[in-house]
Amino acid sequence: MSETVSEENAPETPIPAGSLTGKVALVTGSSRGIGADTAGYLAAAGADVVINYRNKAPRAQRLATKLQEAYGVQAPTIGADLTDPESVTAMFEQIREHFGKLDILVLNASGGMESGMAEDYALKLNRDAQVNALRTALPLLPSGARVVFVTSHQAHFVETAPQMADYAPVARSKNAGEQALRGLIGELDAKGIGFTVVSGDMIEGTITATLLERSNPGAIEASRKQAGRLYTVSEFAAEVAAAAVEPVPADHTKLVGDVSAYQA
Image (tube, rainbow, N blue to C red; front, side):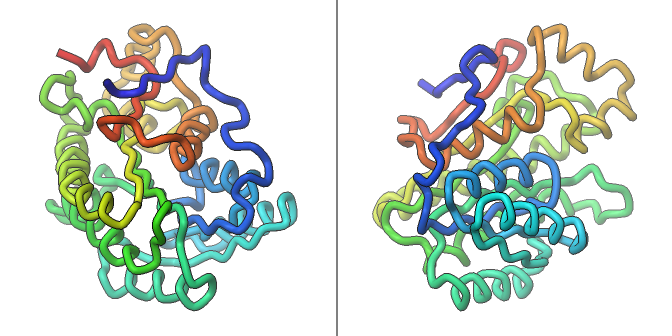
């Protein structure tokens, strides 16, 4: 069974302070939103955290400065477009030169609803780029390392979930990314590396939720009524961060929030 987390037991402090001292984490897409809060929780536990961004260097640097001052950790910022393999290779080379290892890899960056992107952009980012990032990171991941892939219930339960037309291509591409990453579990197991998928219901305050509400007025309220309440960015990020240290669930899946609308 997947591990299901309800609103009542969502942790405020997911990882004990100091428990990740000496560990190095990378959170992709961490200059804002879920990624930024996840990086904050890991830093609060003592981990040095690499802040990855695509094109918002000042915002990433503000977060890095905040984490360094608050927790005394290292928080280098590295710009990288995950759909550009050379950019990804350069990012991990910088991590190797700076730290020599990577203990936690949170694959948080995703997209596909942005305007002006190529038709296959969602698949390139949500599947191909995720697999390439993990494969490029593998030489840096020691035994005991953890990989966390962040997704949504709409994507995880894509075969049974009610889909909004604007989000359907993203959901399908993220599901394809999850399945492709799951195909690497045997290789990860052989190296002693844990892998967990964290799937959540619609999250209040995310860019995706905002875009869906813009194209489907009432979507947020409908989801809120169905679930009773929706997780906030900070609450969901706490679950993502916790997945980096919790025992790996039997089916490698941690479900956060209400799932009744998505399961067959």
